[in-house]
Every structure is written in C-alpha cells, then in structure tokens.
Amino acid sequence: MAKGITAKEPHKLEIRQHNAITTARYEMSAIEMDISFFLLSKLRADDKPGTKYQISVRELQEVTGRQWHHGQFLEATSALRSREYVFEDNKTVLQVGLLASALHRKGEGLIELEISENIRPYLIDLKNNFTSFQLQAAFMLPSKWAKRIYQIASQWKDIGETKIYSIDDLKVILHLKDPKNKEKEQYSSISLFKKNVLDIAVEQINKFTDLRISYVLTKRGRVFTHIRFYVNKQTIQQLPLAFELPTDDVRKQNARTILDDLNIIEEKLVNRILYDENLLNKLFQFNYKLKTDKIKATSNPGGLFLKIAGLV
Image (cartoon, rainbow, N blue to C red; front, top):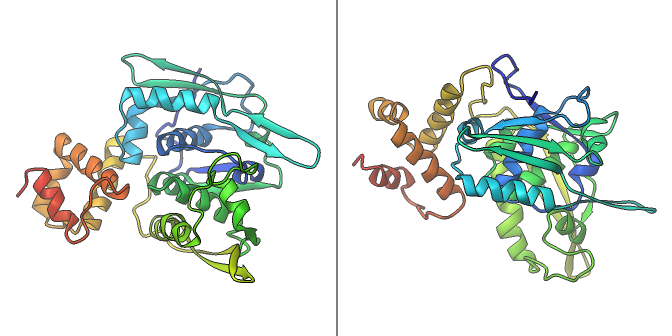
C-alpha cells in the first residue's frame, strides 16, 4: 500500500539525507524539488524495496501554497526519472536517477512514486553521515538555489561554519557549471553570482528557515576563488506547518503568514480572504509570482494584490 502523511504524524517533520546527496551534482526545477522533498519526508528505514509512496497533489499544493497544473506534474515526474544524481569518488562515478516509476491516477489527484534501488542506500542508510532539515523550510524557499544552499548549510549547523568551498565546486553542486566545461557557465561574473544566487539565497534562508547564514568570499590574487558559509540556528518567525492539523487549516496558516508579509492585517479583510476559496487561490498565485519575480511590486505589493483580487 502506498504511504502518505496522516494527521497523526508530528508537525516537525524532517527530511534526512545522506551527505553524499547534499553535495551531489544535480539540477531540479522548483516543482521537482517540492515533489522530491515530499517524497523524502515519507521514507522510513524499514521500508522494503519496491515500496510505493503516495503523494496527494492537493496536499502538496496546500502545504506549499503553490499551484501546479496536471501537465507540470507529468513533466516534473518525467524529469525526475531522467535527471541524474552523480556520485564520484577516487574509484567510481555513479549516475543514478531518483525515481524508478511514477504512476499518475487520473481524476484522483494522486501520484504513486517508486525510488530507484541504487539510490536507496543514500536515502535510507543514514548511519553517522546525514543532513536533517525541516520540511517547512524546504517548501518555503522560493529559489531553487536557496533550497540547495540550505541543504548544504544544514549539514554544518552544529559546527557553525561550513568547510571552505572553491567557488567552482559550489557552482558545480548548484548545477551552474559543468565540471568538464562542455556547457556554458552561468553567472560567470562574481557580481552576478552574488546578486542572483548567493544574496537571494541568504535572504530567503534567513527569513524562512531555522538557520541564519552569511558568507565570506576569499581571493587568490585579485580573483575571488573560495567561499565559506557561517551558520547559526534561529527561532523560526514563520508559523510552523502543523501536519497534525487538516490541510485546510495548514493552508490558512500559510495564508495568514503571506498576508502579514503583505501588511494586510485588517481582520475583516483577512477573514474575507481566508474563507473564500477563490481569493485564497489568488493569494497563493500572487505570492508565488511575487517571490519568483514574475510580478514586480517594490513599493506596495499588498495594495497590488488587493487590486488584482478585486478587493479595492
């Protein structure tokens, strides 16, 4: 039987990943990451090979506050079957996909996923070498690079600082640079790399997660070549995702957080939005577009949402 999140499971749900996966080179879109994080949260050490893990499309959309259509889910699971994790040591290079199969149940809003057996040891056999991070944070981070850097920072959260990475190695992990230089490097300028990747990741991680991070770049000669992240734990200011609550309540918690960020606090207006399904959908769609720069609203994003929603 496929596994799913039940109301009895604790709200401080954690994903645990073998460190080899944290530092592996792979590329995912935001929806692929959300599916992967949701899948990883369901894995248990005593799962048998061939176990099918059930994902409810509606539940995934409720807890993330992001709306995806059926075609996007099909594309995402197809990509997850074909895209590679690459693990390399002195003797071997392992190329493996995350999923062995993905079954979409038409009209039911359910997806059943089976992981590849070759990757199972990295996911299940944690032993003394793993990274743990809260599912809430993984979902709340809009930037895919913020999600990846958060994974890396979580690996070092009990130490306070990461190892020193070469910028080239970090770009390889983030899939911004081909280790064999066959593909064009993204953000080759250090100023663009800082602006579009590092600074956005730091801002989002500090706002949405249990970590507060910063970084220092170091030079060799006149060129920045290395980076170290400094990692501290912090109390999360956002409302936690209460997995013991019905998904409708979780969705309203997320919506309240978004409304607070938009400075929409008048209680009558807030309640009107929270208890109108159409307005809730518009709110989550607006927030996603705002976080991904598909909507520009630097001065008064709350006012813009109210205008788009027909509330002013």
